Each structure stands twice: as structure tokens, then as C-alpha cells.
Amino acid sequence: MVTVLAGRLDVKTRAFSVEEVPTPRPGPGEVLVKVEAAGVCLSDVHLIDGTLTPLYLPGDTVTLGHEVAGVVAEPGAGVTRWRPGQRVLLQAGEERDGAVWTRGVDYDGGWAEYAVATESTLVRIPDELPFEQAAIIPDAVSTPWAAITATARTEPARPAGVWGAGGLGVHGVQLLRLVGAAPIIAVDPLPEARERALAFGADLALSADDPELPARVRGETGGAGLAVAFDFAGVPAVREQAVRCLGQGGRLVLVGLTDKPLTITDGTAFSYFQQQVLGHYGSFDEHVVQLVELVRRHRLEFSRSVSGVLPLAEAGEAVDRLLRKEGNPVRLILRP
Image 1 (tube, rainbow, N blue to C red):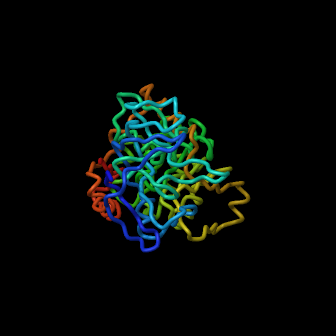
Image 2: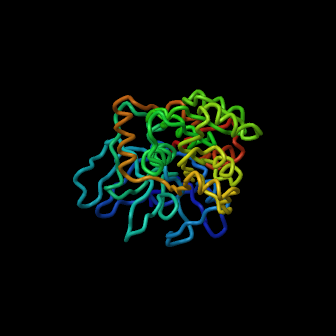
Image 3: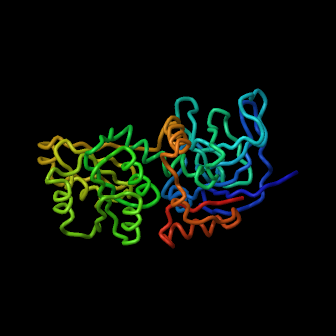
């Protein structure tokens, strides 16, 4: 039996290893993809450390990786729209019986030499888009894009705040600039992250430890406060700080995940100024398609987002580097 390498997680023991597995085969309506690049996301780390648990995984083990790009290797029975050699990225999940299953969580993902995908979850990518950059679009880029355009309904020339300038937040800054938000204020405790936020288009970058932060936000916005604030960090203290920076009708969008309570310290002011808290998770297929088109039209590029490329065999090292924030990475990429 022909085998290939895959990064496998036992969700019961949380043991992760790169091991030989049988080469997957595409069923009817599926496509076998030769993986060229796969992103390493903090969600993958949380799956390994037990912070996250799959909802629908039918067994105990899964191949990780929900940010995947590659080349069509073999269409399954009945597939006519895809042919070998086409360059594609894979949507980060799919709907099954009314529930959204996440690739690399609820079914096998792309930390592998080959991955199987339902034919409707493939998206063509232009020849000039490197696989390493294409791979991160289905989450690291599409999640903030959906938060900005769909959940927050961000308006041009209106002030926006980004808390957490990591893999999601720094793309949030880049995309807020694309839609015309102004000013864009980034908040992060790490000096390197603040510098990166400025390089990606923030007008102002502040330390989360700055006791004058709300006043500085008011000053930058002419006293109005933020029209929208995005929590990409998933930290309770961040959310309370962001609420204090909102203006009349301001919206706090919760993108970063945490199981800790959300606290509104001054509920009277929150109600008086008619502010809102909005939950956000992931993106829809159309958001990925939109982003690929924007890349095709040279409105976006993500060369700065690839912080390092490691071989698939060193997936464990990539996880450790992300956990330690070694080099303050935006995205680390695995290449089989």
C-alpha cells in the first residue's frame, strides 16, 4: 500500500505526530489535491493543547490543516469541472446536513502530501499567486475580511480599532485600509506587532498597557471614538478596553475566541450610547472568492504575511514556534 506523510492528532490524548498514512482516494464528487502549502494557525495549536475540540469528527484522529493550496491530482467519479494540474485553494470547511464541518478539525485537512476535497470546495487561483500566499486566504485573510465587510459593515472614512496585530489582526489592518476605514488604530502589547501594524497600514499603533489609551483614541478620532472595534486577540481585558474606546453607536466585533465571560463594566453608558457587541466566526465561501478576485486584480498581495516555510516533517516545530511567538510570525507555512 502506498503511503504519504500527514500531521495527525489524536483528539483524546492530544498526541500529535507526523506519520505515514495510506494515500487518500477521491470518492464520487471529490477531488484529490497534491498539497503545495498549508498554513499553521493558532486554532491548530489550540486543537493540540485541548483548548478546542472537534464537534463532528466521527473518530478519534484527524489530519490537521484548514489553510490549504495545491494542484488537482485526480478528479473522482462524476467530477467534470476539475482536471489534473489546475492550481487551487481549498475552502476551510463545508456544509453537511445543515452543519458546517471544518477542514482539519471535523475531517482530514491539509497537513499532508495529499488531501481529498469535495469538488465544490475548490477555488481556482491565478498562476501568479504563490501557493504559500494562497493557502492562508481561507482563514487568516477571509476571517477578518468577513468580519469587516459582513459582520461589522465597516464604512469608509470612519474610525476603526484593531486589538491584536497577529495573524488575523494584521490582515484586519490591511483590509480595513482597503475598504477605506480611517483612522485605523492598532493595539498590541508587543512593539514588533505594533511596528508591523503600521507597516500594514495602521495610522496609529498603541500599547495595550498604555493607561492613556482611551484618551489617545479619542484624540485621534477628534473626540468621536471608534465606529467599530475588532477583538482579534480573544482576551477579556481587551474587550473591556475596546468598549471604552467606542463612540456613539459603536460596535465591538468579537473575532478572537475565548471561553471567558464578556463583561461590560458600565452598562448604563453602553446602553445610552447605543453600542453593540457582535460575535463573528470564520467566513463564507463568497468571501474567499472575493479575495482571490482582489488578488487577481492586484488590489491585494500577501508576500509580507509568510513569516517562514518549513517542511511538513517539521510540523511539530512550526507549532512550537507559533506557541512561543518566535519571530512574531504572521503565518508559518508547511510544504510537503
